[in-house]
Image 1 (tube, each protein chain N blue to C red):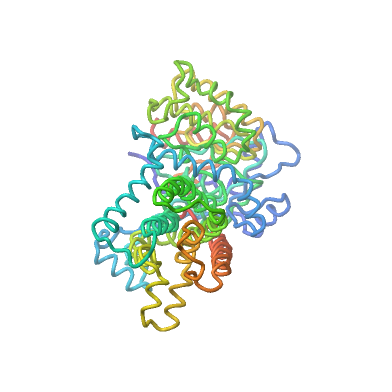
Image 2: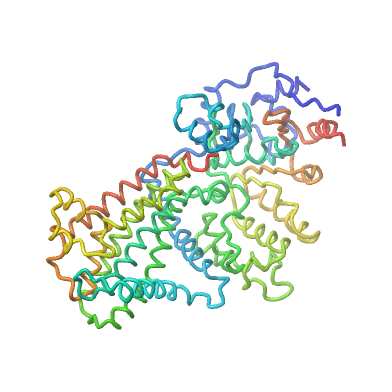
Length: 305
Length: 281
């Protein structure tokens, strides 16, 4: 081979930097891949809202497209999940922890918790798992974690349909308080999207977090009162006061208990912690807005090796 | 050859080199300026220990040590590349495999961060390609919508162009295939649909990465025609290709990258002659 692999050394140095910058400024060129300002970023994200929802729906639909029953699985999966929990906790163990309407209590907890859990898991992989997309197309990267959170919300809406059937089967009466489920879901979604964005940035930098998250999430699930009533257990235990406050104001527990309060008639307001709506709104706003800003701060670095 | 580089890496040198370009007016408006751009990839889990558990632990425990000792390998993909592209130019990017052509285009599109240097652009350059946004489990129809939205088209724009995209791809020539999932398509069919979606949008600065090699002969002709059309509406076109003929047909200036370095920058014929000598053709 007679190829001269090395480039011959240039005899003149390239144009000085201030030169290029000056030319760029004169013709109104901007630095490629620079982070937009926060208001501009919000505008860009809003402009992509149709992509965000289309991407979420596409992911959701693609999930069961190879199955013979197809989209029937959207409702079948949560119903089967509930059946397993009924079998283990209702039939095998018979443990009700003194909770009335235990099955509706349990299934509501499981579905609402799953919404937060899977949003966080999906958020962790939102950037690191879609590197191809990030490296091929230009769009505000927050579209990805938000889109994954929306996909989980759509999934939850199917689960809620199944939940309504379960509630009615177990004799929980239909009531006006069911309407409260809507604001609860909106707040929980905002919270989930915020955490998903925080995790997306961390997962983009350190993909190892995705391996660690299942353990953190499982611990979080057990302290969030998914399968037991925080209120019942706390009244009997001798935990220090700060631990009780921490357990009760844990966002997952707040959203789960609020949903139980709105759907189940035997779950009374006195079982909720004090200022529960303020907590629910506070968590949603702080984590939602904070997560968005945290994610935006690293916007230009997503997609690097 | 050294003197070609010497003059052409300077903006005024580039002006001389492309004086034959049709758009060469009294004042030429730059659309992309790359100023001594370095791009470095970092790959985890290589080098010492080859990704074994002890090497990984070592990496975490001794954060201060040099990246190389920590098993992070740096791949210097693009080294100190400077050029200025002007409105109305069609620029070919050539070089042997792994010489950094696609990496450079991604950096110009703002998709890969640069290590050193700056890239200034006029508006948002776009890469012609939507492969990553499409999902094999969805029907072709839904992929047209998804791909269009992913490129930043509005819902109305996608609806308006939908029939055009499907007709251009020719997917429905042999039956109603657009309503089948994309995983049932042959590789040629899905490549045609991908190109058709990607080419449906008008761009300011358009970058095409080896898109001309897809599909059968008649589709290739159609896509070349479409690229010429896109060139008319776009300010500047970059084309990566290993097909010297399509570079000759579409470009008036060529950048030759070799091992991440800009080896030559000049009129198509001059650079291709040197490149063909280099590759032994």
